[in-house]
Length: 272
Image (tube, rainbow, N blue to C red):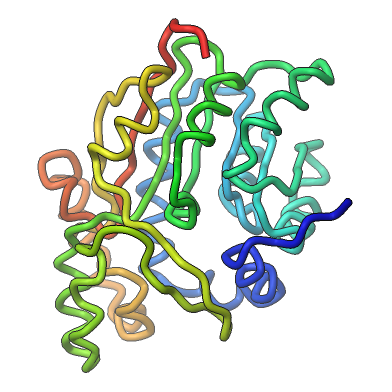
């Protein structure tokens, strides 16, 4: 039986055909993506087996596959997975439509079918913010990752000065502090309604214990503004390059102020 998609998956499913065209041309998105990719390459040794959660149309998976990594991409949107599969076909990467809430079941199926453990996992551009309870994600990842493997998870920051300024300048001050709110918050994409949760550090640590320990946080987009600043910021590439330089200098010390925050967890030796 085919289960109905969750609201967030429905929203991204509907926008999948134009997703790359809509967001791929924005320089702020490219700048933040470069920062995440640099962190992944520092942490993942070459040719490792890597699992991606919420991989979308496969842009980051393609980047890693082109550098010799063996990818397994998952995403809750079947349309996104279809696009990713086409991009990754020549690299023999695996893809599957899997929601984060179902990761425990996915892990059990993968292992029962003789699937190997992964050397690392990552998630970029905040798909985990569409999941209210992260414990099934953490439990599933614990079954799928080797002891000592890194899990590099990018979520929205909760204190983003770049968004405060951008939303006020755009005449939408009511949105400036939305990330400070607790619980599930209404969101909208492609005329479809769903809900997001802005996870805080303590929430992340509690959800991933005892299977993972938090090693560090890296701010993504501290000076580089959020996509709400588009298309204006893309017309100022020199300013954006300067902002990237600033981000590299302060990404650890001021991580809390990032548009996104990369949480670097490490799989413990404790059984899942």
